[in-house]
Length: 105
Image 1 (tube, rainbow, N blue to C red):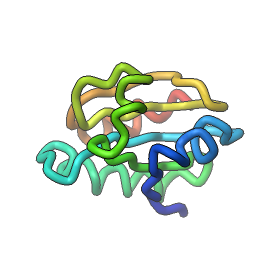
Image 2: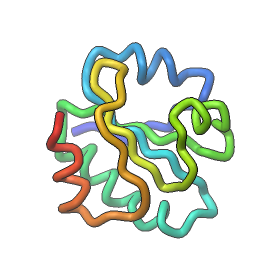
Image 3: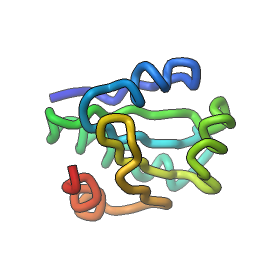
């Protein structure tokens, strides 16, 4: 059982891109309603999947990452494997939809 940690833009390369495993990245903002809706779901996924590192990135404080990954809306989930984006999911989603999304890794 793991917990969701917040990653700052400065630490993204070390914490996510250099991580030798699977990572679910939740780009969110504190003011974003749909982001608040999926936050408990993202927490559930982190507790269910010991093989999946789950992190959150505050989009307001990570504009360079938003540009780098072409993120135009939040919430956006990136599914990464060995530092490379495998898939992207934009918008609020149910637990079953996010489970299916993360089942790719």
